[in-house]
Amino acid sequence: MSSTTISDEDLPDESVAVIEAYMRQYRTAKRKNTDATFSTREDQIRDFAAWVDKPLTEVTTADIREWITHLHVAEGYAPTTIQTKYEAISRLFRRGEKLSTVPLDTDPTDDFERKEYDVFDADTKKQLESDGDRIHPLTAEEVEALANNVPSPRVRNELLIRLLAQTGIRAHEAGKIKFEHIDFDERTIKIYSDKTEKPRTVAYQPNLSTLMDIWVNGGNREVFSSAEDSHYLFVTRKKGRISNDVVNSVVKKAAENAGIQEVLYVDQRGSKRYRVTAHALRHTFGVHA
Image (tube, rainbow, N blue to C red; front, side, top):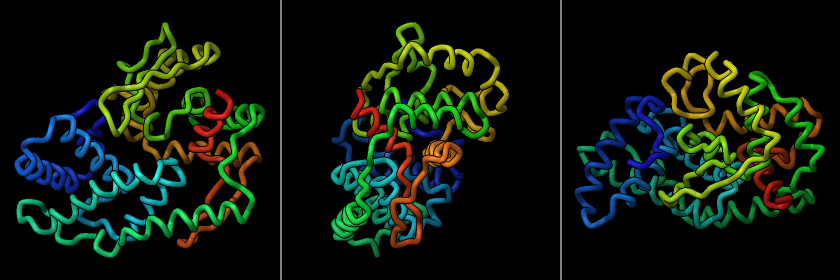
């Protein structure tokens, strides 16, 4: 189990039971695979289970479609990466439905055809192009406006937004930062990818050190009861690890508060797709770094 794995406490009991049963079967069937391969597969499943925020036994095809959209639009993953993540989840449900040892009765990926990837890619690009709005980087003034207009809790959320903008990390990567990953003296953080156990190192600017210290050592983090037993940098009131959805919600709310949010388009499910997102901050770093 790699250091990026979401803990059992973050998942419904039913999902934990499904994952444990499937991984036992997977390890038995694929004995020649490396430990890194097993860990990557389990991480992919646990990431999905945490995102869907319901027991794996209750996942629907609509959930799968929404997740694929989230990976592409909110997280900004490349189609090949999305394909890999989907394969892991598809095999979980496909094998789980057939095995009595895995408590899954249905396969929600049955009605999700692979060609939908091409349709989704094309539709998304056409919608963005029709509005004349691809994912544009934010200006320095817009990033500052975001940081100055974050919702409560202010210290955590300002640190989160500034860290996203200064390092270019993804929303889910921010949620996985542990104290052991941070070198406060060098102002560097080890970031663990879903695809490898070897981390990459990112650096934050000196002007973020004070805010980091206030959050970590100034009593702001300890206000949350979940912080006591958590090794993660970012916690919430109820959980010891911030989720992707909370990260994106913080960014979107800050953009609304700052008056810089825009709706790019409404997708086929009727969901609004916004200009200012956590992925937009990643793109901002990529352009201005």
